[in-house]
Length: 314
Image (tube, rainbow, N blue to C red; front, side, top):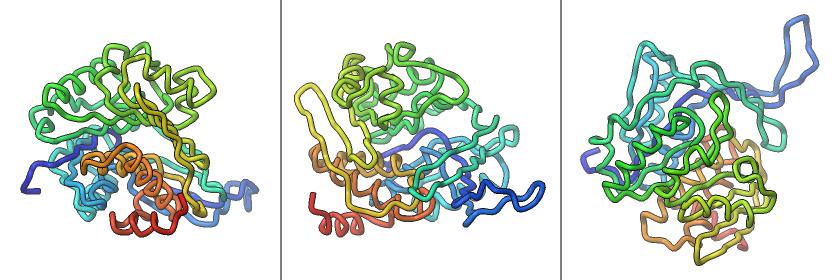
């Protein structure tokens, strides 16, 4: 990429082993069957970077990969999608994480992580290299590397010093458990946060999108977007409340839908769209993602999303 990226995605990079239609009844003492098994690159930073690049946004990624076949697979997929991979950190000491995912017929899924997912690399040490972008996406607060308050504070401080827009997704904790109070000093530096409904409920302790959003806003976050799955999404800031309905689709696999949603939203904000227009576009990106197996399969281009939106009565 000859020009500075508009967007840098930071966070987890891995390979997903996706098992669809798993039959829990054994066919032998140690054998089971499934409808299909596929390998797909994944992780919040990878999913978001690939989606943003496909949407025409100049995108780079800052992540950690092992010097292994899984890392080669991730890098090749990123480059094929047009993502700048020059910031990737590779180490023979830390293998690329591989996640096993069981996908249900309705598109919901369960995942199995392992110790490789715990590696807490240090994106803040690369601040001289990522300060050139217009915006950052933190792939998943509360998961490595963003399960360390000092790493989060350092990354966000550098981003704001460079005048960058900060988007942050969230995940439920898997190894290290933190809450909003643990990040209180850093949260006001986040411009947009995008938890799903389960995550928002977990971190806020509230049960309605309105109350959940108020908790996040109370910590100084400027804009809150709660992804409601089949119910659409909810947006709130100090002046505006929006609730957008879902898109009319048949879901096959929800893997990466939230990452595609955020990539679509960030890309449109960088294009100068209003939050409402960007949310509608983001809803479409997330919906399209669910129509194929794998986080990076369904979404192809911005033109595809715009054509899809023309078919929707929302």
